Image (cartoon, rainbow, N blue to C red):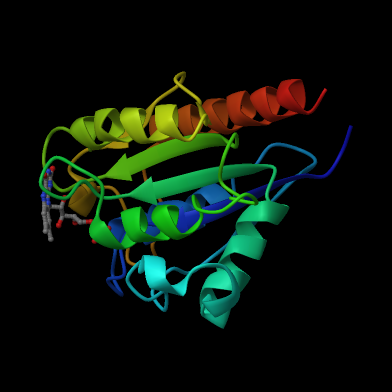
Length: 184
Ligand SMILES: Cc1cc2nc3c(=O)[nH]c(=O)nc-3n(C[C@H](O)[C@H](O)[C@H](O)COP(=O)(O)O)c2cc1C
């Protein structure tokens, strides 16, 4: 089976974000027959239950369509205060509402980069209750957590560490395999 489609989202809006750099590297390490579209979340308004369904802002409708079209999601995100950055959580909230909530049941991979020594380990855990409620399927092996991210990229944003690249490839293969299993 071919043409598995991932949607990749960075949890950081910062121009020089290590996580956005990591996401761009992920795009170059995809398994065969997998494509990935990078989707922006910066223009989404704050979630407001008064603007669901017919009053939904166009930018939200477009975002939900992108999520619906994805076979699996790849979140590449910093850890903020041991948890999910507000912008990314907001995007997930918009995609989680209504009878046609597009995010429910999707396979997902979380990768994280931080400048500290933990690489976003607590972010990975913070996602678990969210995935449980949304009946999502997170890939657990092999976990991608890039610690000391300020030392891991060259001037052009290329990931320098070969071991990390290998772990990313393994993670993406696992996500592809899980996606195909769930599609059967
Ligand atoms: C609001 C905020 C909260 C943060 N909380 C954490 C944290 O809980 N754990 C951690 O390791 N780093 C934390 N950091 C540091 C981030 O790891 C660091 O700023 C990282 O570079 C952000 O990712 P980015 O480069 O993709 O923007 C925090 C940064 C911000 C701005």
